[in-house]
Amino acid sequence: MATAEEAVTARTPIGSDLKVGVDTLSYNQKIVFDLYVRLILPLDGYAFWVKASTLSESALINSMALNAAMLGQPQGVSPPSNFIAQGSLHYATDSRQTEVANYSANRMVFTSEVPIQDLNAIGPDLLYIATFDGPIPGSSRAPASTTAVRFAFSSRGSYYRQANLWHYIGYAVYPTMSTQVVDDPRTLATSQLIVSNSLPIWLAYNSFNPVWHVPVPRPLVTLFPSMLVPDNRKPPYVAVHISGTDTEGMQSMPTLGPRTSQYALAKERVGLTLYGCNNDVAQSMLYSMLQYSLDTELFGVTNIPIVLDDKEGQNELDTIAQKKRIVFEVSYNQAVVRDVARQLIESCVPTYIVGSEVITP
Image (cartoon, rainbow, N blue to C red; front, side):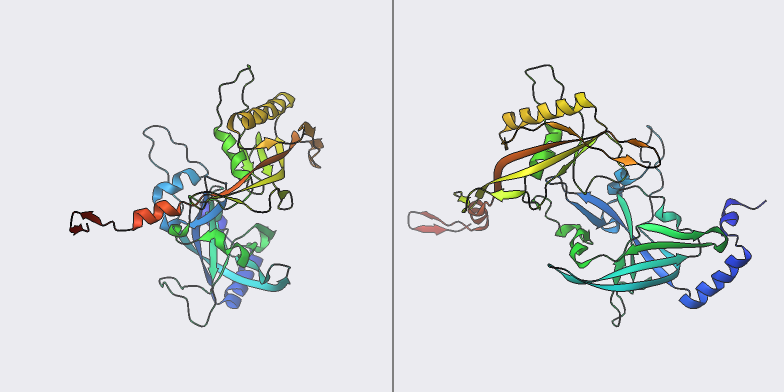
């Protein structure tokens, strides 16, 4: 009886012929895949992908798909920090011109002779990014005549079982997204905000635990930034959406503090989308948000928010999701806190004058 590995690698007659064709066309091409870990900044929920080989092994434990272990249970096997896949890579380049950037979009198609198991054996906070025309295996430098292209896969398609070929499809990292792929974690300023809107205020609600004056429990529902909700997250959860056009200034000149800090009064429209919440949870969420504003004074509510029902269906299920929406119009202070004076004091060398003697430590 054939083993599981032999069953996977066994090829049909047409699959054997296609394998010869792929090897001939690609000259036994090999692509290097490097493992990256998702890093979420604690202040505003911004996501980066950091190269796993620059991090400690402990950084991977909470990124595994199955990482819960019983007391005394031996630690599971971590995914490899890199691997090499053999197949055929071809890509098409499409030049794009937008208002803010001109760039080339490279659509990559990698045809593999075997399923790439490492791409499936990782959690949602891990990602393999491939490099084409980069450093060859065993070297840290790419050939001088090439330009490295990094890409990740978003889909697998055009699979035909009898052909024994697997097609992985994705786009190369756009130039505008290159700042989100980090090879050296020391370049990240994790103590500084990236967003300029009120998103950090809403994410801070996740740790809000006041003493209620009335017996209404705070819903234990986690808030995430829109577009950055974890992959395949199951309800209940809340997505906070703030459009770039929904923020307006309410003063022409920011107020400057004694240490060059600046504060600008702003107002904006914030949409909270709730999944998996019934009416009681949604109403409690609305009440607790108003109480959060009152207790912390981080923002003021300028409209009369109310819980709204949204419709979102799936044809295969013939039903609709538990989706609700709450819209807040708020005012708050955009702030940049700079402590220049203290930094100068910490960096200077003091001189003491005692009588006629000058002492410099």
